[in-house]
Image (cartoon, rainbow, N blue to C red):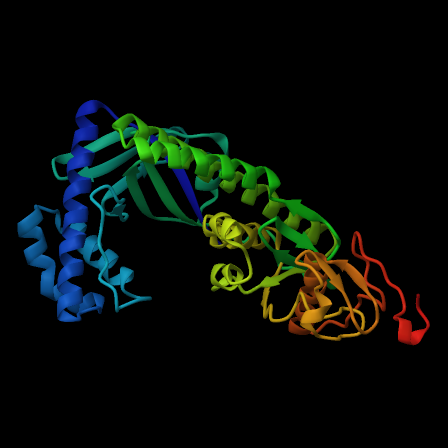
Length: 386
C-alpha cells in the first residue's frame, strides 16, 4: 500500500538559502530538459538521459544524482500527454531519491540529511505521532519531495510502501455512492453529505477575490493567497471526513463501495449545471476524493468498484424504466412507469450499487422497493393508483 507522509523541516537561514538555490537550479534543469524533450520528441527516459545529462550538469551545476532525477521527472511528466510542452516553476518540489537524502530512524525519525548544491545539510523534522507510526511501519521509504509552502516553511513529503494491514473483504453487498455539487455525496443507504457550508464559504471567497483582484496591490495578493489556502484546507478536511465515514460504513457492513468512474467527472457534470454551479464545481477536488477513498478503503480491506454512471439518475431502481422524464426537477426523481419517487442523488446511488453487484457477481439484494430517505412508492394511475 502506498502512502505519503509530509513533515515540516526546521532549517536555519543559511540552510534555507542552500535549499532555495538547489530548488531553483533543479527546476531550471527540469525546464531545460523538458524543452529539449518536446522539441526533439525524445520522451523515453534512457534516450533523454543520453541527450541532456552532461549538458544539464554543466549548465546548472547539479550533482550527478540530481541530474538523473531531473531527467526522470521530465520523462514522467510526458507519460500522459506528449502534445503539450511541460514547464516547471522555480518553486516546484526538489525530487530526492535514497542517494540524495538520509532519514535517521534513531530517536523517532527526528532528523534528515539533504544534499544541496553547497554540500549536505542536516535538518530537524517537526514530526507527530501519526507520521512517526507510518514511517516506523513502512516496508520501504522511497523518494521524497522538498518544497517551500506559501507561508515560507520548508516541507518534505516521503513516499512510503506500507504492508496491507487488513485482508480484503469478501463483500456480501455493495454501498453505492453518487457524487454531486449541492450534495457532495449521497449513498444507497440514504445518507447525504451536504456541501452547503463549503459552497457558502466559496461564494463569499469569490466575492472577496473579485474585490481584491480589482485592487491589485501586493497586500491584496497576499490576502488572496491566504484565502486560497484556507479554502483548499477546508475542502481537504471535508474530503477526509466523508471518505472516512464511507469506508467505516462499508467495512462495518461487509460491503464494497461502488462509485462512478471519476475520469472526466468534472467535464460530465459541467454540462448539467448553471454558471454559478460551474464555478463551484470547477474548484471541487473529485480526484482528491478518489485518492482519499482509495487508500482508506485499501487500509480497511474494502473493495472500491468503478462503474459506468450513464443514466444512473434517470433509471428507476424498481422497474428499470429509463427516461429523461423521470427527472421532473434537478433534485427529484419520479418514475413515469411505476411511480417510484425520491431524491435524484439517492436513486443514482441505488443504481450504482446495483451495477457494483454485477461487477462482483452478487445477486441484486435491493428488494422490490428500495429504501431511500425521502422516497415514496405508489402505483401509477394506469395500475389503479391515485
